[in-house]
Length: 359
Image: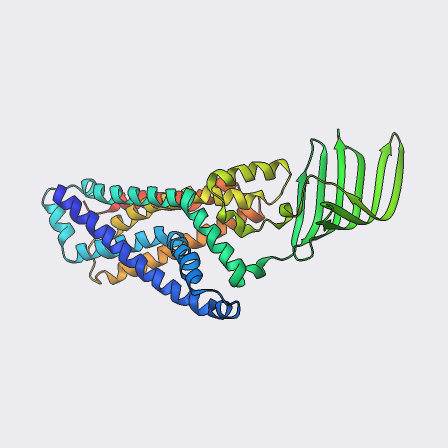
């Protein structure tokens, strides 16, 4: 069996790397076509384009779709083994179907561990270099825009709200800070705009109003402008969604805790990214089992039908993943459950196909 195990493992690894190589080659060509004008107009040095961008772009795009290409690779080479009656000969030779799964499971676990380690520790560092390059020479810098609905908690009972924030002018709109204790508002300071003063390192409040509750009396003060020191700066507002890609998992978890303490309502996005780094690599194992169970049955149409089914299943996996993510970010679905829903669904599919596979 050691010879058979090595044979399947070799087929698995070679087919996967060949498939991922084709994916990366196509992705690079498409990306160059889209960004060549930016590179030329911003006079990006060729060395930085190759080393700082594409050396980090390759693992990013590769890991994004790696589990699905593992699935397609297993479908492809296993269906060839089935078409050539090699799988039938193995089963007729006394090798049980579940023993035949061992080299597949072993290789898929190796891939899953490799993908997970890279996702948690190495890829964020690569993304930091890639994103920095894009901000300098490509269209990534255009993604800085007006962000909306920021909530921060700066004390046990003190809350800050900003309706929107313009990254270009460092200006916030519809700003308020209030203290609420025992369901009672003690004071509220609001302003039409807040502007960051980089020389004083303070916020300038424009058209402000201060209301304080003293007993049953409200004291109100108004003014055109004033300066105020707050425990938050521009950096708190500037954090973009794509910045979390440049955080290691340890940094990301720390950032999530920090945002929860500040009352940020968009924390689901960060939790999804943290959970996704483990859930997506784990899907490699589930998709491998589905691929093996599906392709060990010989059909008249050959392996063409298997490739079509593989593409349909891959597409449906991505669709389910996107739907669950949307429900988590826009609705009330728990981020952990949202990330693992595709794996749960496809886990049941894997069990069903394994039980029905020819043995």
